[in-house]
Length: 307
Length: 289
Image (tube, rainbow over all chains, first blue to last red):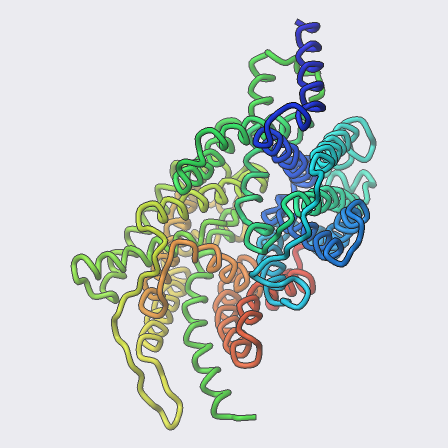
C-alpha cells in the first residue's frame, strides 16, 4: 500500500515537471490553473481554516497582486521583481485591513472583507489613468510561458509547505488555539491580535504572487475577472470540500473541483453556481470537516495522522 | 452652495433611507436574537422584489397590496429556513453560520438568475412627482417611504408591547435567563428569522416601485444593509433606523458631489471606514471579542 502510494507520487511528480514539454497547451494551462487554485484555496485556509476568521473577499489580494504586478510589468519591471512587489502590495493591504478589523470578533472581519473587495474593484475601475479602467491592462506577451507554469507550481508548493509548518510550529498551534477559544488563548498569554494579523499577511501574500503570475501568463487583466466574487467562492468551496484547517484539504479540493468544473460544470453556468451554494450548505451541515474529516471519521485515515 | 439643490438631495436621501432602515431592521433582529449574521439578507430582499414583479405583471396585482403577499410568503420562507437549516448552526462557531448563510445567498442569487434570467425588470407604477414649495417629491418614493415608516413603527410597537416581541427582546438580552423564564428560545429564533425575512421582503416589494431589479442586486443591497447595521451598532433597533436614514443622506450627497463611478462605492467605503474607526457603530456599545 505504502509503496504503491510512493510510486503514484513519483509518477505524478515526474509528469508535473515534464508536462510543459511533452503535453498539450490545454492540459498545461489546466494544470497551471489547478496550481493557482491550490495556492488560493490554501491561502484562504490559512486565515479562515486555521484561525477561524472567514474572509469573504479574499480574491481582493489576487486582484491587487494582478494589478500591482501588471502595472509594474507594464512600466518595464522584470517579472520576478514585479511578482515580488505584487505579493508585498497584497501583504500591505492585509496589514491595513487586518490591524483594525482583526481586533474585533470574526463577524466584523467577515463583513469588512465583503466590502473591501467591492471597494477596491470600484477604485481600480475609477482610476483609469493608472489601471486603464474597464478596458483592462494589456502586457506585452512573452515568448516562453513555461517558466510561468513552474513559477505557479513553486508558489503553490510554498503555500502548502507554509500550512504544513503551521501544524508543527508554536505559531500554528497558537493560531489554532485562537480558533478554538479566543478568550482562553488570550488568557494563556497569546498576543491574539498580532498573531491573527501575521496569519492574515501570510494568507494575502501568496494570492498576491499568484495574481501577478496569472497576469503575466495571460498578458491581460481587467477588474471584472481579477476581482471576481466567484473566485472567492471557489477558494471557500475547495477548502471546505477537502477539509478546512488541514494541509491537504485545500489541495484535494482544488484538484478535484477544478477537474470537475472543467469536465462538467462549464456547460451549466448558472446552475453550477447554484450547486456551489447548495454544496456549501450541505458541507457545513453534514460534513463540516470535509472529505478528509469524513475519511478520518470512518477510520480510513488514522486519527493521529496530521494532514 | 445652492441651498435648493442641497435640500432636494437631502429629501431624496431620506426617502430612500427609510427603506434601508426597514431592511436593516430585519438583519439586526436576526443578529440580535441568535448572533447569526445573515449574509443572505440581500437575496431575500430580491425575492420580495420578484414576488411583487410577478404579481404585478401576471395578475395585475397592485404593487402596494402585494406587500400582503410578499411579507407572509417571506415570513414562511424564513420560518422554514430557520426550522430546517439555520437552526443547526446557531450554537456552532461563528464560522459555520457565516458560511451557511453565504451558501444560501449564492444558491438564491443563481436560482433567481436561472428562473428569471438576468434581465433588468421594473414595475411601472405611481410615476411622477409633486411639489412642496420648490422641492420636488417623487410620488413612488414618498409612498414607499411612508409605508416603510409605518411597517417600521409597527415592528417597533410589536417588539415593545406584544408577548412574542418581549420574548424576542428578552432572548436578545440574555438567552439563558430567557430560557429560565420559560421562553422557548428556539420558537423565538424561528419567529425572529421569519420576521427578519418578512421585513426584507417588504423592503424588496417597496424597492421594486422605486428602482429596476435584477438578480445580482442582492449582493449590493446586502452590503448596504450591513453598512446601515454597522453604522447603528449590530443588534440595535433604533441604530438600524437612524443608520438607514444616514446612509440614504450620505449616498445622496455623494451622488451630488462625487463622480458617478466613485459615488457607487460610497456605501462600501462608509462601511469599511466605520469598521476601521468605530466598529461598534455610532450608537453601539464597544463589543471587542
